[in-house]
Structure formats: structure tokens, C-alpha cells
Length: 228
Image (cartoon, rainbow, N blue to C red; front, side, top):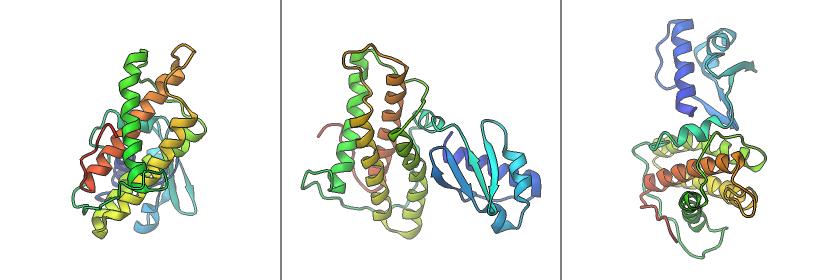
């Protein structure tokens, strides 16, 4: 379940509860599968009524200091991204040049490009190992990656609104950094053991990260490379 889907459910709840038609509902990813919206505060609506209206279809909701907090299964985001090749894409993000040198992880340009190449390599090699993507049951470092994947569409919209591609570039560096950690600490491919549901879950996570990185690089004016 992507942030756009969660936002759409909340938008429908605003219409059904208050009879108010709104466009995009402001939503911020504050954890893996956790989103917060100030819509009730901004429109002067009954937050509890909105919570009751959205607490279904895989969404659990509550009110915290006037904010509507929506929780979905953390693994639902990467599963949804792999079915949404246009995840996070928006128009109007200015180009942002990222240096390719030095080729160290501290260099955002290299880190983002290498993360995309790694994510694609996982998909290529998964077929050789007989591992196919499957349901995602994230844990540990994978949860941090899922959170930044959930944040990325918001940063893309912010970059377009502000006319500053570096806003998105910084977000991509966070995605890349989180993916490198997962890649190294949570292997998606079996070494000596047989392929398992854990590997299938991690292959899906890698695929989702690859889609987000590809789309992010495309928005800042690059043609993503699958090999470096």
C-alpha cells in the first residue's frame, strides 16, 4: 500500500465524514508503514470521526495531538512498489548534477548510482538462484529502508514545488544509504542454505528500492545505469 493509496483513503474519509472535497491530503511517512496527516487540524474536522472512517481495508488509525495517524503493514509498501513502476514520479523536478567521483559511499552521487546497480544485480542473480520475490516480512534494518521509501514521494513533490532538485537528491542519498545497509546485513540471496521465504521477501525489498532509485534518478535528469 503506497502513500498515495493511504492518502486517497483519507481523502475519501474527509468527503464521507465532512462532505468536503479536497485534493491531495497532506501525509508524512513517520515510520515503516506509519503515516501522519494534519488534515483534521487544517480543516477543523473531527479527527476521531476520520479515524473511524479509515480504520478498515488494512489500515489501523488513531489520533495523536490532533494528527490522524495511519498504520499499515510495513511490508505492504515494497509489495505495492513492485506493482507500481511509476512509484513517486512527479513532473517539474529540476535537474541536479551529482558527481561520480570519488567513488566512495560518502559521495552521494556514487552512493545513489551504486545502490541502484546493486538493486538491479539482486534481481538478475535471484533468477540464477531460483529465488522469486514474495510477501515481505521486514525486520531490523529493512524497516528503516521501508520508511525512507515511504518518504520519497513527498520529497519529490517538495523538490518540484520548491524548484530545487537537490531536495530530492538528498532523499535519494538516504534511500541509497539505507539500501546499502540492508544489502550488506540482510543478504537477499542464499549462500549455502536453501532459498527461503526470507530470501523471497528481501528480493522484493531490493526490487522496490531499485524502482524508487531509478525513478528518483530519472526525475533529477539522469539515465540510471544497471551496471557500474
